[in-house]
Amino acid sequence: MSKKIVVLGEVRDGALRNVSFEAIAAAKQIADGGEVVGALIGDQVTSLANELIAYGADRVIVVEHPHLKTYTPDGFSQALLAIVDQEKPDGIVLGHTSLGKDLSPKVASRLQAGLVSDVTEIEGAGDDAVFIRPIYSGKAFEKVKVKDGIIFVTVRPNNIAPLEKDASRTGDVASLTVDIQNLRTIIKEVIRNASTGVDLSEAKVVVSGGRGMKSAEGFKILQELADVLGGAVGASRGACDAGYCDYSLQIGQTGKVVTPDLYIAVGISGAIQHLAGMSNSKVIVAINKDPEANIFKVADYGIVGDLFEVIPLLIEECKALKVNS
Amino acid sequence: MNIFVLMKRTFDTEEKISIQNGEIQEDGAEFIINPYDEYAIEEAIQVRDAHGGKVTVISIGDDETEKQLRTSLAMGADEAVLINVEDDVDELDHTGAAHILAEYLKDKEPDLILAGNVAIDGGSGQTGPRVADLLNINYVTTITKLEIDGTNVKIVRDVEGDSEIIETSLPLLVTAQQGLNEPRYPSLPGIMKAKKKPLEELELDDLDIDEDDVETKIETVEVYLPPVKSAGRILQGELPDQVKELVNLLHTEAKVI
Ligand SMILES: Cc1cc2nc3c(=O)[nH]c(=O)nc-3n(C[C@H](O)[C@H](O)[C@H](O)COP(=O)(O)OP(=O)(O)OC[C@H]3O[C@@H](n4cnc5c(N)ncnc54)[C@H](O)[C@@H]3O)c2cc1C
Ligand SMILES: Cc1cc2nc3c(=O)[nH]c(=O)nc-3n(C[C@H](O)[C@H](O)[C@H](O)COP(=O)(O)OP(=O)(O)OC[C@H]3O[C@@H](n4cnc5c(N)ncnc54)[C@H](O)[C@@H]3O)c2cc1C
Image 1: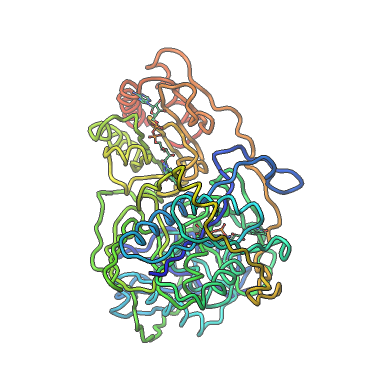
Image 2 (image 1 turned 90 degrees about the vertical axis):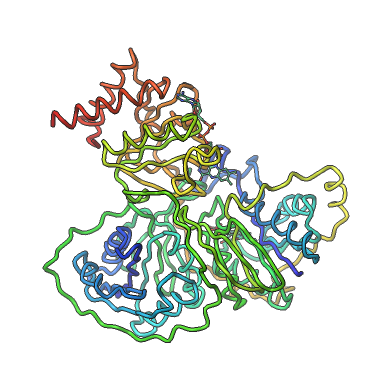
């Protein structure tokens, strides 16, 4: 049976995050020929509605309010619940991001609904949809079905392919007025950490360094490699704790979960908490001087050697490849 | 201050995982306090030591869960509550788990509830915010710093590596992120004392909860291990040649650069 699914378009720094387009693709599959309704919540976000439509939303509902300028669970849940109340959808899809993780359980609780979090793949459609999600720190997977009630899922970034962008698509954009009140948390300040350039959780190539990098200086050569490959730099907890780089680069259970096409782990031992954040990557390269390092167990290609010799060579070879192709 | 910690006994995912008859094999496996709940317990103890009050650790589990609750008491918690659902339910999902915890907490007048931000086995990170919602109290997830002054609370929250400075007030539920503190190991005197600390055991009946109230909304149809990756290729030869080969493989075989 075809369904109506609401998808939240997540806005960061004034732009929609890729995971929202992936969420639309997921919603299309669950909708099974039904309707996908985009939801935009924020202060001044209406201008982004057409992009949601270009990526497959049929129409968009916008809730704007000065209190929605920054995310709070109270503000955003009031807005999303108002949309749900108006639309009475059969399902809701959000990205499994910091915002999605914080907001979805509250909204699910309000709706007395189950919630399938951190979905990496969907099989089937409509009522037969089966959701695949990693469990046990990524060492196993489960397939789950929603028994009854609203189909509420969050999707892990970079796993479900977005639909082709089609700027010629059109759809209705309507605003919904919601009285946002009684916010119990006040965000006094957001301290942006040093991450620049490509969004780590959405990057196609991630070059990641560990304690083996030895210093903050060491991380500079990783940035050079990432730049050549058009990717982003990541890190292990070990490197962050040692002060070689900012915590915003951390990959793993505590940090970001990434699924790039190519993950290059440099001087990282491969602790389970790190693997939980990257083992789903399509191709994994490990560079480590210890042939016994755990990271080689998940690697497709490995080089056993001193990273300070390997990385400069790798940068040169990648540059040469670029020149030749 | 009336402080509660939600604690899950989890499979130690550093251990090998195998599946038999469609289920994760638990026999002989190592079980631990969910690591993020250790941060929650440590923080609860520190808040109590600074502001006075009592720390109660609650867990929904089975007979085996007593071990992790005793460890929590040995770390310094004052009391423990085991909600033993072994005889009542075969399956439990987040809706049910949150309902049980909230039913227990609703007349306890908590000032502060601490949970882990995610359980390393189930991995959904839903329970904390759901419990807060059911109790109609405020919550902040993935916190790395907590300062309490009267009923005013100042928090640093980790948001994908950025830090939000948040002001809010008690009563409050927070979920712990790595970096909040360094959990202590139970000391020997702590372990001795823990044996005499109160550990209350309850069943769903004691909370007036019907099995129907905790009916699952999500059904697990299959649990499986990822396909075994064929052993990766460790390149051989002189380093410059290895690097050349790697770039060539990534370009022509894997087609990722
Ligand atoms: C609750 C919890 C959550 C955690 N969450 C995370 C998380 O999200 N992300 C995460 O990464 N970790 C996490 N950890 C920490 C994790 O357990 C490891 O401690 C951490 O990943 C180790 O980092 P590392 O691999 O950089 O360091 P190490 O384990 O010290 O490894 C360094 C590696 O570098 C290699 N090396 C050294 N010098 C060279 C050289 N010159 N050339 C080549 N190789 C070299 C060494 O052989 C070694 O393998 C968590 C831990 C806990 C308890
Ligand atoms: C008898 C029994 C049967 C179960 N059957 C199933 C099953 O069939 N399928 C299945 O997937 N799960 C099952 N569970 C696990 C249960 O459903 C989970 O504890 C719950 O749904 C939380 O999900 P999560 O692991 O994703 O935790 P998360 O939501 O990721 O946990 C976040 C935090 O919530 C708190 N928390 C989580 N669980 C508990 C708990 N049990 N007690 C106290 N605090 C907690 C902790 O602070 C934790 O850090 C069963 C549990 C029991 C006791």
